[in-house]
Image 1 (spheres, rainbow, N blue to C red):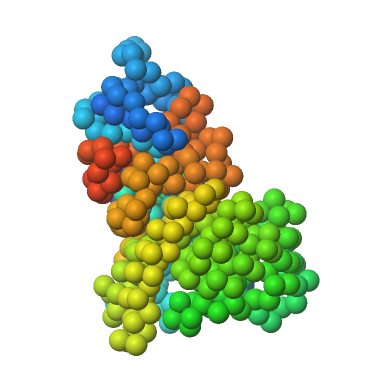
Image 2: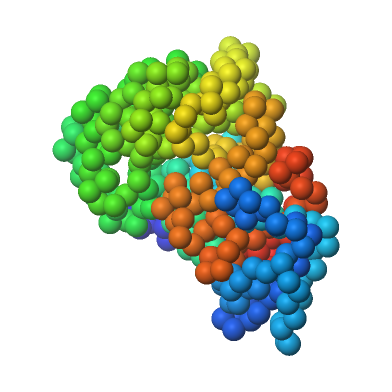
Length: 410
């Protein structure tokens, strides 16, 4: 079955290859010996530092050096960004690029009547919108199509962010701990970058713990033995505690976390990826696409003030590692920066928000040595925005330049 799905998606991508390539904003990928010198009035390095009047030398896929002295390399491509602010390519640690609105105006599902080519085009559009919004790396937490999308963007068949994927999500309460360990091993063999599991029900169902403590520990323990990170959907306080004590890597959502769980995560070094507004507001704004009724919308509307209050406590919890993730779904792709604005409104400093989506995000992905920072030796993932987002976070919505791996897309 898995091979059949992959083949279908691959055929669909073949049919849209020409269209995807013509949609590119810039020429073909930079060759290995290509050199660019980028000048910008302001640089945010991704670690919390700011520099003025900076030149960045990019050779091939990597940053060669950063200088506050003018650099002129004969034959190099000069990129003048003027008054814009340059910063590392952004990282969204929780995205669903496979979700889109189908031809019937509904969130795609097994019942969608779209052809494989139509689905491929829609997903390629999601990735393009995300890249143009300045997000050069995303973590997709569950979709079999992700393997083809990951390969297509890595080989520059379609323009999009670098993709890490869990391929699927482990949520069934039926398998035994040993069976769940086997599922983790199978996903590792299928080249999953991480494991996504549900320790709780969804927000609409109250977020009660679903998997047992033993099941959670089995999944996270097996993943750790294989060198895989684990991301846990956990809404309620009890489900968060179970995931932390089960040795899982990262908690997603945490809507009903109390100070006890926030401190517990900090004590155990568990990474926290809360969502403040975008995913909830997106559902509220597009109820027809998701077939929501007034009753099913009620907990989503209530979640925004609840999540905002929880986040305000989280950023004041000493030692808690907070990263950036939006849970972007259909109709939210490319709007990722709206979550940054909500975080600032909830009390986080603009610079801390930027760090959470750059160097801290890279560290959470296990990629701290080559992503998330503007410095020599790092991957040339660079974006520029109109304005200084460390002073006005809304500047993150005004992207004027995008480079991923040394290739200029915008």
